[in-house]
Image 1 (tube, rainbow, N blue to C red):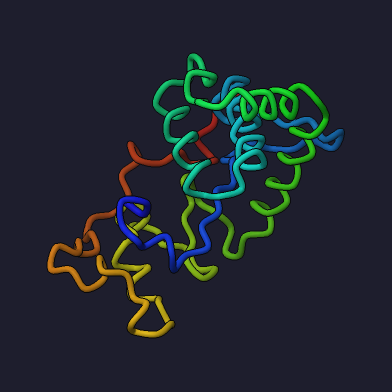
Image 2: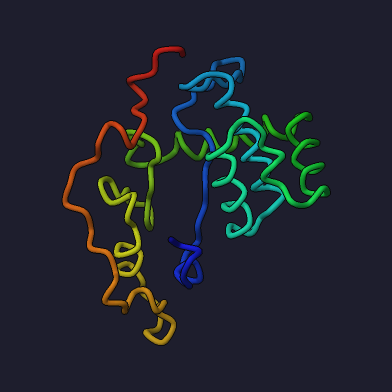
Length: 177
């Protein structure tokens, strides 16, 4: 939704591909859903580096999340594919992931599940799926710069329901790490 409107123009959107992973004392990263999740987190970290513009890396990451069998099919530019491969196959991907681990562990309050969406440092909890009204309410800039979607009668209402366990991954439910 954020890129289907001009909403992204008033946000500083950051994806942190770490999830519920853990870092051991020897800096080994173990992911909640296994090695494939760790691999994709590293690929996504490298993609964020290759495409600093969120609109570009989110498009790639959305594709990867929908088809994890071959992430290269989500890259349309061979130079970017090479940059991601070089990053992933070198030491840089681990450095990036450890940086994302540090960001994740520094969250206050601590994340309870993933995805963990924050707005101005505060978690959205139940509203993480439909954050458009929350972003619009939080906007403090000039009224003339308020995205059209914020004035729309089609603006979705904040959901009333609680987070379903089907929508999130709780850290304490991990079985293989």
